[in-house]
Image (cartoon, rainbow, N blue to C red; front, side, top):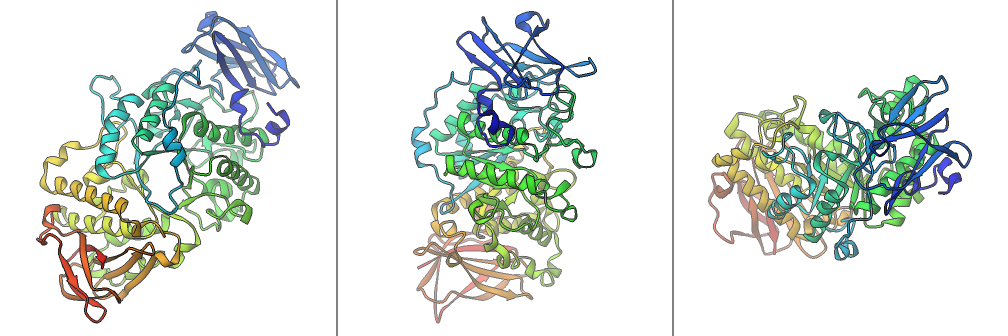
Length: 596
């Protein structure tokens, strides 16, 4: 290992030296514990009695080599503080961990799985000029396994169930909530203890590799939710690791996050090397296709508060990590979950930006959902909540998210947020999703939204699959299938997402009628999207499309086959006269039209 690079936050392969490296039946254990008085290795191979480790290099690293080792063995480090007390810790760089509430690390062979995804890896792109339709999911609660005491399927079993579903629904990427080991199911993986350990809830290292490999063989990319901001407080993990604040800030004013977890000290080179080696580990060893980085606002600003100022060292860490990743894996997707107004999140690092490919458009999400919560009588007043996004849209490369955060903690699910009673929510939700899929920007939806679930997500329960027996829900899920596939099939909806020539307002001053219309283009194909978000039917709306002969219907949210009340003819089209087409726009409806 490059020790100087480790200390100065310049390396990305620390996991190849630190942790437990198994070769044949020999294992080398190495741990960084600079303030430890002494360190012992305990495990099932020595009856959990202490085997002393030796200092190496400058005395801040401890190492031991053991024979007769094999994959699956349990171990911990017994770390003695200067006052003589000791704590048994899991391995910060360990490749596996026990299932909670147990906390030992597990010896794992990283080289025992052979990937078969060469074709995918060669053709993979960052989707800047192509469709990116992400299905965000929590692996443990998508479907529950009746034969498992916790209700979990393994990574491998999930792959076999999930992949046909994703293909049927028209999702070309899946994003999984954090899979690093974590002690509390309720944290969903956002407060980790084993950063290099795929959670044992769903199986082993090879099970996870199989999951990703199978997705790739079916042309589905896999994005990992990555948490570089904070970690769990459990004393067997990173907190006070060697008797000092090795991974967290020493100052209590900034060491504890708003979630009660410990904040990583991004100013420390050893921590930078730990986190960026972790990011590289998931990409190199598991072939993940992207990292969605959580709570970037809390890296940019001290404690996530702009009034406390920019955390310069932390932002430099982000730039350095993202620069390396994009240079090493140009086709990997880096997405920032960032609610701040910080400029340049998706600008290249050499241009002074943070180097992400995409930024979650939290402003679009909040404005849009607030608009649809509003009584239609007042949508004229709030009309420009939906036009505002295009005023700032080209400042960054945006991804439009309806994520897990929007369907929990009393916020209500997406369909439940729609104004009105049960029956009246469906036409609005269908129109909303047509608006989302035609608006510039890549797409992300959390599992269950495609079923129009009214119950908030609960990590202890599977999705409400039985609601598909109700006609409105059954029709809705077929609508989402059709809409997603249209998005994948029509390049006008994605190829020029970040080029001003890819979008044109056709009508954005209909405050009294809540009508919106715009054109999408890829330079060849042109598609027009028109919406009536008011509660009143509009009989003769003149859509100003300019050139062209006719508009051919691709999909309408009010189609009777999707639970609407309008019957359309197969191949329905409208002639264009004097640059306009006259359409009937029922209340709470949208149309996507191909311009010929």
